[in-house]
Each structure stands twice: as structure tokens, then as C-alpha cells.
Image 1 (cartoon, helix red, strand yellow):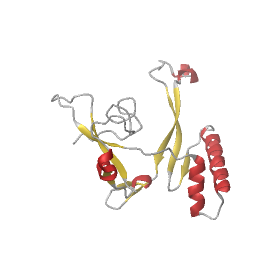
Image 2: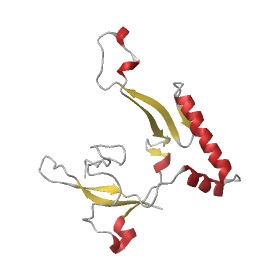
Image 3: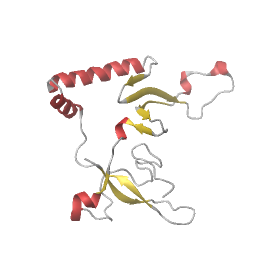
Image 4: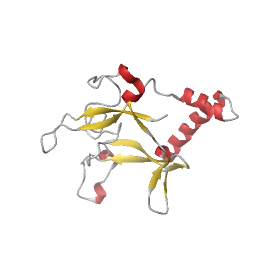
Length: 175
């Protein structure tokens, strides 16, 4: 199944005063939860959905334990998880004054596994072989270009509710 996109017009004009259009990925239906993932994996394995669900829950528990013990977790073929702390501009002059009270946010960063070919081309495991299809090619007359209520991110370029958010890819500046 290909990734589906629709046109999106930026709210902010560029230097030439134009509000450019960009592709934005569309999400359909419900999010896939842990139980559904367990059922789908069980179809490909010799385990029951309950066994797979148990493994996924234990994986999350063990990953959390390892990440909170200042470890990086790499799952071959999937990617690497590591904890990132942000000080949010709360720097201090002396090294001896650095403390955990400066940390304003903590997040788990995921970096997809990638391979690099001999010619230097990098391919991310989760995005290799992706095809894109315009939403009108899938939904036909059910979709109106002016409809702002479809899912697929917020009203800012890059998706999400903040400019350059992590929910969608940022617009291609060469377009």
C-alpha cells in the first residue's frame, strides 16, 4: 500500500509573497494499537496474538529500563532509541554549577535503521521502496481539495501544530 498525500497551502508566504503548495501525508482510519500489531505479527509467526502482545509489552518495559539506565537501544532492522535531555537555554557559567534542575524536557529519540550502498546512497529501513499516490487517485470524488478537515497534520508547513513539527516531513525547499 502506498503513502497517500494531498496538496496543502502554507499559511505563511515566502519572500516573494506567494503562499506555496506542498504535499502532506494523509492518515486514514484508526491508529494501529499494540493489540492489532500483535495480531498482525501473529499471522506471520508461529505464535499466538497473546504471545506476541506479551513480547511487545516486555520489549517496551525492558527498553524503558535500559533507556532510563543511560543506555542506547538498537534494534537491528528497525533503528536506534536514545534519551535526549534539553536545557532550554538555561545554561550556567561554571561547569561545577551544571545540575539536573536545568533540564526542562526529556524525550526518547528514534533514528530508523539505515544502509549505505557503495555509491553513497543512504536508505532508511522503514522508508525503502515507498510509493506515493495522490489522495484523489484513491478516494476519487469523495475528496475536495478545499476541504481542510482531512487528517494529516496541522496548518503549519511541516505538519503538526507547530512549524517544522515532528508529525510530518517538512516541505521541500527546492519545490
